[in-house]
Image 1 (tube, protein in one colour):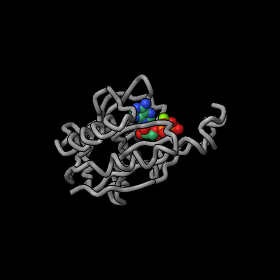
Image 2 (tube, rainbow, N blue to C red; image 1 turned 45 degrees about the horizontal axis):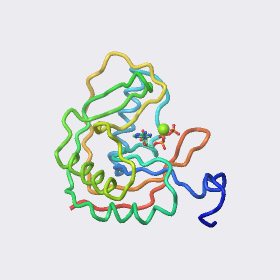
Image 3 (cartoon, helix red, strand yellow; image 1 turned 120 degrees about the horizontal axis):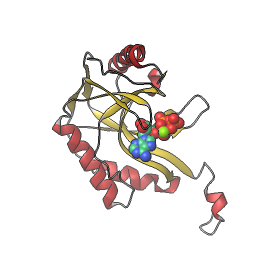
Image 4 (tube, helix red, strand yellow; image 1 turned 90 degrees about the horizontal axis):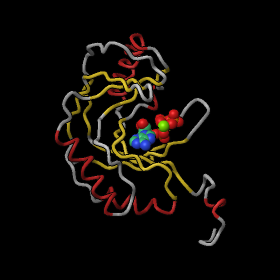
Length: 185
Ligand code: ATP
Ligand code: MG
């Protein structure tokens, strides 16, 4: 396809990818998050996220031209950040989108450093960054009623890397494909 192709051709799904950077849990953490999802569902109802989709978004890019993928990878290559343990110990609910989630009472500085470094690199390269403050959370429930916030047993997540994911929309909700993984120091 040439630069001068009509706009409607550029909107074809093969030309753009729905992308985001995230933490992708190891098997044990994924199982623990899924158990917490089951437990929170008993309190708040809604639709549980499938176990294989559980993740924590670090930076959401949204629809991105496939041609920008190399530049995006180059951004992440510049990020130097440290491994850490993320303790997810706080259930939360957002009324505006009816999402029930698991978050951190206190995000470790290494987590905030990672998000900061990623956003700085993305912004410098001209990619869109979220102006809102980052709230580390794993979405567990959709279309949930919410309710009184129950005290939950913490999930301990050893974070040793971050990933770039492609979101693929399906009738039963999105699934995610890993494009690349970057180790933390
Ligand atoms: P679906 O939208 O199909 O129900 P989804 O929300 O899981 O599924 P995406 O919309 O592709 O899939 O989002 C991928 C991740 O990025 C999710 O964690 C989502 O919460 C987050 N996200 C989506 N839109 C934004 C946004 N505008 N700002 C920040 N994070 C976002
Ligand atoms: Mg969405």
